[in-house]
Image 1 (cartoon, rainbow, N blue to C red):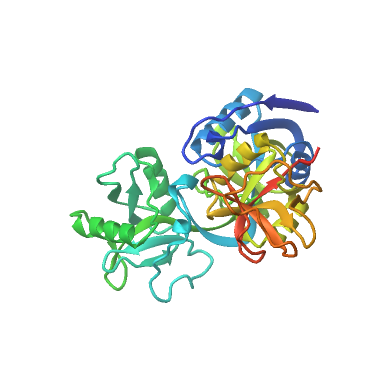
Image 2 (cartoon, rainbow, N blue to C red; image 1 turned 45 degrees about the vertical axis):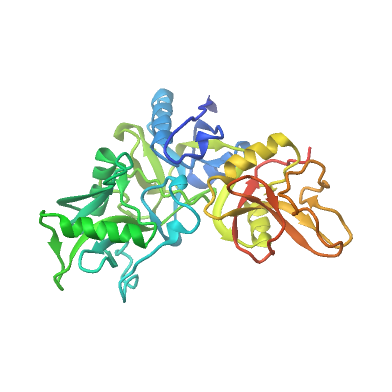
Length: 387
């Protein structure tokens, strides 16, 4: 077995968690099927590679080229989530709940499995789901233009080609975070003299960046970054796992999960899971998929947790912190709390009251005024913190 360790300390990059906390990728030149590769990565590192943005993708492309690997598994696999998500994967672009804004027209989101991309109607600004293969005008978002960030492109393209155009010429397909932005895009569509495409009821439509995707990352990340090759994924027989192809400049392909491949792992002792779960659900998830909910036993760990929490989609993030009747605060790994980073007034709890702890996604202080049934993002640890 040959293991090529490329300790890539990822710095900067649009929306990348690695902009604050270094993350290491590792190319493993041993042929394994996707499940075997996943098991190996979880045992030796953290998981099969999750790729958050183009900065990370460029690093991965360089690594597989240097390693002489033709194709390699990454951590993306076809699942059953079918979540709607935005093409623009920058986590700092969305404040709490902004990524969940929707403006559906009536009777939408009821189409077949192929209706997985979203367009906006010029007439009323409402959204409709449609086949991604349809050719429509589209709205790009240009993050470098604060005055006119939305660009209507009247050339008709399918959704994937529209996404590629926006990423190459602007920032990405447009995300819509609130009604104000929705109204601005509607005005851009109405004000253009370019020709659009009309559907059967006469409403001009244009692609925006929302899409439904059943592909899931092995580590539970909700990263919406995709780098498919032209015509991929094509869902051939049993092709439910993703690989990156050296010969296609790193573009991704769907392939049968049973094929032996080299693969890419990543190493990060803390994993932010941007799924909303109760405290007990989060604890169970971390213990089943990693080691545990994170225990913050030192200032060093606290700094890493604070940085990781900045990428959350909720205002607070669960920690492995608990208070039980007759006991002081303690960590799920078994230690009582010595080092602490409480927000003012949050540490005090009635002696016989059960509480759980979370960290602020902005500010990084701990709070206890939540209940176990609140649903938040959470941070898992891939190693035991109570050494």
